[in-house]
Image: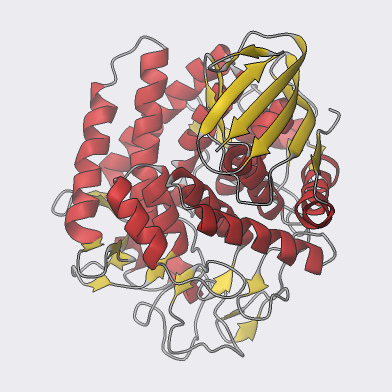
Length: 469
């Protein structure tokens, strides 16, 4: 599929934000969208194309988390067939229908539901939606039966993102950073109840409810579960004196007050935090010179010279979620800082969108874990798609619905005067022009006429003009 083109009127903005966009497109569309082996991946018989999206230059396959995040971030819009097949690549057959693959990272599996619902909304593919809803229901019921703790009303398991032990305090980690790198090899980690994992379940429940309504099915089971889980998160993890959520509760009920960047972003994106709390979270968060970090502050066994791999380092995927959360909450300064920051990081490493960066120097740095220094993989797909999401859903404010496309842009001063041309949206091609600065749509015009949204059944080439104030 031919790539869209982003151009800013101001040369300095084009040289940074525009150049990073081109590099991110190259990462997704040409480096990491690759042929797959049907015998290995098409286990459910639902993959119909020839390519899928791998996790990155250092990882030749997709996993559940990568497949869902990359589809959600950008692939479902820019490479819809490959995104669909990537989502199906991480499912396996079951007598009741396809299920998300069973592996040793069970705690983050429900992110597939979020990615699948997004894919349906972007593409309008109702056949995919019907199949995906079946997967969602089976997965949510399975996880509630096996991983839910009724006493606190929360799901157990490690942090959504932190599969490495460097992302946790000691205990459960060893004080000398020893032992295995894999989180579940450490006692008690299967009983943790983190913010990110539980906020993700809220998002998955709400996605399942939306799927059900779209298909004319009852949504009460999922809607009630989302509300109950949100209340449990607020009751257990909200810290009123700090105006933010804590990182996790351990099996004994002890609250760790560390800042989990991904968890806080999810709390905003999935409406766990109301508008007032979302503003407090964003305004009170600690951000390092090169961006929001995974977990802050540094644990005692790490330092600036030896940062923890899942501790106080910058993962661009987390930056992308944080920037989108800032845009949703109307935090223009926070959105600007994180988006410009990721462009600077990517261009500073030759445009290759590394996996991990040092939070205070901006150099690629895989961090320390279980006593050794790790690499930062090159051309990490979710680092690039994180940036693409900042442009599409942050700057241009694309809001995908089954019926069409709406806009809620976040345009910092000096970034207006941008065009995004040749963007494929379902069976149409859109040329978008963005002008002004701010977060409110002053006018939206489709082919010169006032409009409230872009209909999902358009075909052919169309001009969209968005003025903000």
